[in-house]
Length: 412
Image 1 (cartoon, rainbow, N blue to C red):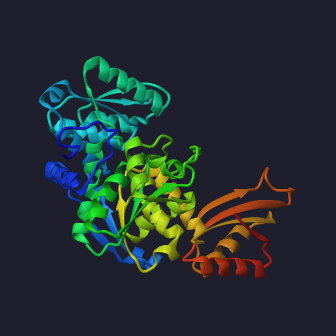
Image 2: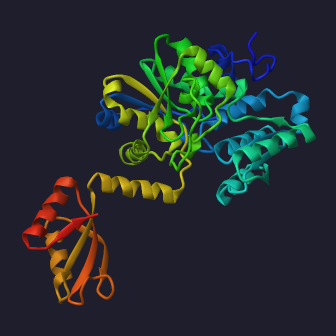
């Protein structure tokens, strides 16, 4: 019997293609069947044939709706009357809130006190009651379990639940229905629910397909667990959606049994992936949502020529963070120059430098001209310019022309 038929305990890690197909039927109409698109621009950039599953187009901007919708659809009449509770500071909160609201069920979401106001507001906007408690996710989770016991609420775990996992697996089901030629899946890993569900569906649908999890380098919790190593994670990351210390026990057991590999994407590759999706594919992705592409960028030789499916599993990135990532990538690509000059303090120097840059097609977008306090003597001044250029070659030509005119130029 399927574990989803009788709501078996989440410690039973049996999740099959049949469970995923049943979840797909259950959530049809409540969750968007997002498109899977072949990306010519990303394929040319990586050497693989890249297919993107656009779950950033879900109503809440992330794949989490799939699992939440399936779990809520399986509630008993008593559980529906009592309501549900979840712990999350991000996409799972909105997913549970939305699908509880659609089903006419009360929802309580416990969020840590540090949760940004915009996420609290969005969650409340779907009709949920938000409780701010604790300084960490672990403290918020403990309080959510206390409230569940006290009020008889059903706890909807973001990844350690067989029904949630089966719902997440519908992403791979749809990808392979749309593009059966996909032979490799690169799936982001936080707690492990999405990877487990996708692997359960894909390995039965297409035996021999490579299903590979992707964690960010600073948070290799699942890779460490699978290798039998102590978990050591931490540090800032733009992929906060998969910055997890405690992976799910159900996903861990399933992935261990299936022998699923997890690779690590460098932080820089995640930023590069976000920028490439924005510029090359015209898609907005959060760090976690871009992790699959980050692995492809980090290990291009491994996936060259393969038909790779990548779930863009979330698009909820802060506008300022997105702006910073794009600017950092422009700097790395040499399309923005930061130039530093020490020049004589006399009229016309700034105009002369700007004119030479302009003559070679550069566009000065920022000027910092420090005449009073920063210069080494009163006869000189410091000048900082930010210049937009076509590419690294044009930038090098501009610097060479300035040096030929006897300007001392430093980059950075």
